Length: 553
Image 1 (tube, rainbow, N blue to C red):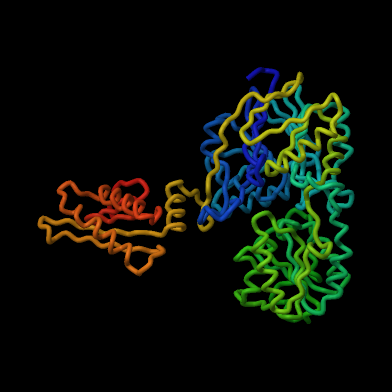
Image 2 (spheres, one colour):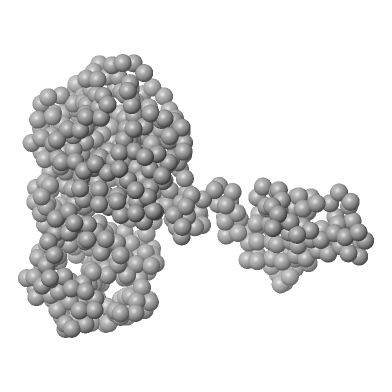
């Protein structure tokens, strides 16, 4: 690497939602900005709860990786850290609230993290990189942008942000600090693109308070309120509404409780015994005096809201007199699940209030004017849109081209692109692979590709199990075939036909499990039965249907 240049390499979150991670590489070291998870974009990967960037590949590509700097505590920015920090003990620099969330995630995985809590506007010197955390507003406590300086280069990473003059927390959007940086000179601005296809400014979170209070005041019975569990700023506003309308708040759902406890630990919230009560205590109050804050804004199967609606929550049952407020937006891919949950509630006479008809939710990501305001403050030589599907990036890119001045430029990047930055300018200088690792939802463990293929075969084509034994005499030979999850004209047709096709192989003195496996797959494909998962038990030895080799019992 040239001594007067640094490299910027987005590994995730550019061309997709989630798995946000960016490498900054200098002559002395490499650091990572965020390391999040990504939820599957579709349901065609059975058992995959989420993806993270492959930490083994990351450490192979960047053996000099020496630290992680985290902008905020959403899962798409911190969710991959346990898998990385298990491989290499790295210091993690972040704000106190985010540190608490990371600590909980590491504890859950039986791991410890070297967490270094920082303060706004107090630069951290790490090798030849200086990093400053700058306050921005978002839908979580203590969200930040980053200023990165190294070898005469200044980079501003916006993080996830919106411009909210009235955020209602202790970490407002630090426009004056960003303006000062713009006056000093910034080489590159990396900016959030999530809502950059929407015109105007993103509404303030305070804009929804009046509607929320009006709907809660009118509700005849209990109110079930759901939003993203990390949205503690909105919970604080709800606390004020509850106090003004004479209601108590009970939290239902582990993730809400976790964020609430973290907000108490970091002194963002103070426990109000007169307002927050337990579920057990809620039984002492009239329905018109209660607000249940519940997880389940995305229709998650095991969330508190879903379990209550489906009568799987023992201590709380839903009534026709209840009101449900969905103070959230269904993220892409969850729209149908949320719609079905709403329909089920309405069929039972429950009043459902959502952002489709009422102003009860606003995004944590800025619109075009938020982006324009950031651009006007920072005044970078070059700007790059990140965070979003390619369509979001392209829309933002085309709009930014119309906004920049003659001495500015805008560039479009994708995951794996290598950008070289020096005081004389920026340029793309190559591409590298960024590989994703699927994680099993039940055990929080990586899923091997062979297991994924087996699961897909089972899901789409079913399973065939073949048990074969050979003896010294032909009469000792035995072969049994069983099928599961296969579509057949007559029950047992496939098993009987496949058995007839395979039984002759047992007379071959060279017959083994691999031979039976190959012949079974050929027959199934030739007879148009697709690619079911085929498992062989040959003379007491299991034959791996994916790789075709024996595994002793």
